[in-house]
Image 1 (cartoon, rainbow, N blue to C red):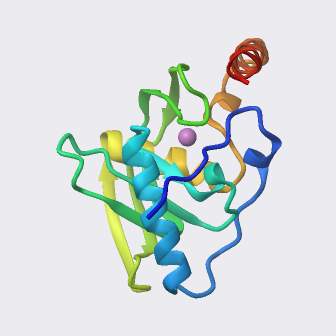
Image 2 (image 1 turned 135 degrees about the horizontal axis):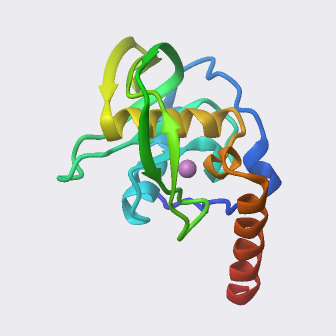
Image 3 (image 1 turned 45 degrees about the horizontal axis):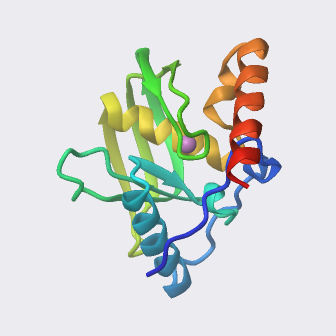
Length: 167
Ligand code: NI
């Protein structure tokens, strides 16, 4: 396993649209293992392949306190979404920024697992928010893009400054 480089906002590659995975094979399982290692090391509660510059529909999530409940979603589809949750979100691609975003409170998602088998999963609370956040990444959408233009401009400037300082 190896840790992968995480793209930082406003990198334009974060806006690429991920393609569906055609076959869940060893290279996809290696990608999943590397993404999980990268997410746990960061540490974060979720990571989309888009964030490591792989434009395939693969997401890993672990919102558990014990950090031992890895969920892998390949080609995820939202089957149902109800209610509204206003949750503070952060993102490994936008370090240090936390903002409230309105999301569905309860969702049902269908996806393939690492074994290539289709499954359906219900989620609420933090897990539901996390799944929606990661699925947005696959569509090229970063959570800060739900905010006002003014806030986005400020966040962009802050990120660029951070990146200049660490370069
Ligand atoms: Ni994110």
